[in-house]
Structure formats: C-alpha cells, structure tokens
Image 1 (cartoon, rainbow, N blue to C red):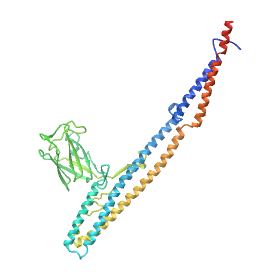
Image 2: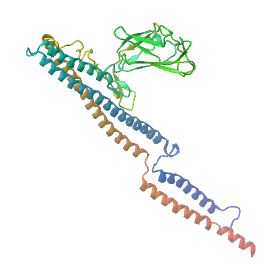
Image 3: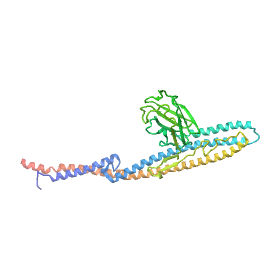
Length: 388
C-alpha cells in the first residue's frame, strides 16, 4: 500500500459519508420533535401544498360548524318567542269564546275586551323585543337602510349623520321634521311619528366638536347617531334644522343568510326569512279585533283560530330548518374528521420509520467518525519513516 501525505482518499470518503449521514439526521430530528413528516417546502413541496389546502378546508368547515350552531341558537330564540305568542293566542281564543255567549252582557264583554287588547299589545311587544345579537327576529328580520336612496345619508352633504341602526323597523320611507333651534327631531313614515329630544347642548344650534348624540326613535325601531366636527366616520357636523325634509329608506329584507360551509358557493349557504309576527302583520292580522260585542267576538274567534294555525305552521317551518341545521352540523363534523385524517396521512411522520432511520443514522455517524480516525494511519506511518 502506498504511504501518501498529499492526499488521504480514506479520510475524504469518511468525511463525505459523515456529511451525508449528518444531512439525513438534520431532516429526521425535526420530524421527531414536531411529529410531522413535512415541516417545510424542502421536505416535500407537493405534499406541503396539499396539506395546507386541507388545513384551510378544515378551518373553514370548523367555523361553518360554529356558524350552524349559532344559527340554531338564533332560530331557537325565534321559535321560543313564537311559542309564547301561541300561548297568548290560545288565551285570546278562550276570551273570544267566552264573549260569544249571551250569558254575558256588553259590560261583561268590555271587561273581557280589556284583557284581550292587553294581550294583543303584549304580542306586539314580544315580536319587537325578540332578538339575537341585536338583530330583530320577529319584526323586520333582515330589513336594511338603503344608503343610496336615503337623502339623510347623502355623501358630501355634511349632515353629521354617523350611522343609522334598526331594531324592528318597518320597511318604508321615513321623513325627518327638523324645525331648528329647539334641539328636537321628529321622524315619521306616514303611519307613526315620534319626536325625541337630542339631550345635548348645541352651541348656536350646532353640535359641539368631538361630541355625539343618539336620536332614539324607539317606537319606530330606528336610532340615528349624530356627530359634531371631528368625529370619526361622520360626514360633517350636525346643526339643528339640517335634517328637515331628509329621508331614510328602509328596505324589506329577505331574512338571514347563514354560512354553513367552507366555500363561497350557494350550497354552503342557507337563506331563511322569519315572518313578521306583529299583530298587524300578514301572519297574525289581528290588530283590529275586538270582543266587546257578541258579533265582534264571533269574528275574532275565527280570526284568532286562523292566526293560531299560521303561527303553528311557521313554528313547524322553523323546526324543520332547525333539524336541517342539526344534520348540517353532524355532516360537517364527520367531514372534518375525514379531512383531518387525510391531512394526517399526508403530513404526519411515521414515528416507527423515523425512529429506526434516526438510530441507523446515529450509528453510521459514529462509524464514520471512527473511520476518519482510522484513516490517519498512513500519515502516522509516513512520519515514522521520516523519524527513522
């Protein structure tokens, strides 16, 4: 065997093997610590893309499940309120039935009619108060202000209207009466009108800088937020009289849209409208009923019966949607389980495989180190020859 000092092929080979084993171990160790075979693009770029897509899908479906559960809560709230309306209608039917008999006189019927009217008013109160997260459910569900048609929201007019909030507001056109210099504001739609005091001091008829006020037309279900100079999201500053003749247009809503899946497609959305349950709405239509006469009581009895049937039908419709949503939750949870398992197949590490290869690499690394030490033998021999 030649004794060379300018080159050492054995050492070079041992160092090359050591580097190769070290590179392999640098991949194995992160996989063992994270439990994932694909930790970055250098591990497996194609499967990383597949895995990230699956993770996005899982996240969307998980949020869709939460949305479905919230939609169930919303509809349960609406159905609970309708159940109470059903109970009140049943009591109204009892009163109407009692008032139809001639064992009572008109004075007796007037006493029954007083309770009958109180129950009508309370149905209206339930319909307007039933809400979920600030959204009315049984009165104007989905109604919105049309900013383009509402002259009170005209951009660049500088009227100081910051925003308008609805709570059981009927669809239609509402007109302001703002005489000026009296710190009051009137709003009406031709059927109902309400005047409110702004409750804030005006400096020469103009709202102060950085100040705000809320004109709460609670009987109409509309809140108008006014602002002074320098308030964020406000167009100009409100001055007493600015809104005179200006309008708010409330559009009839189509109900709610529930996003139940992970994609922006129609199949992953549910649109549902809850009918108007006020006493003047199409479902009940009992606003004008009275039982202070025998004939009136008989007419009321028939109409209350029809109202009970319609409310029961609407409750059945809500119940059907609730069942559909529950099946949606069950299906989506199963889909999440399946996609999660698929993502694990693509990305998770095979611990047994990685452990065995890690042990193999560590052994090879030690053997390469030993080989590098042994490769110095020829150099030692050359030095001995020089010393002889």
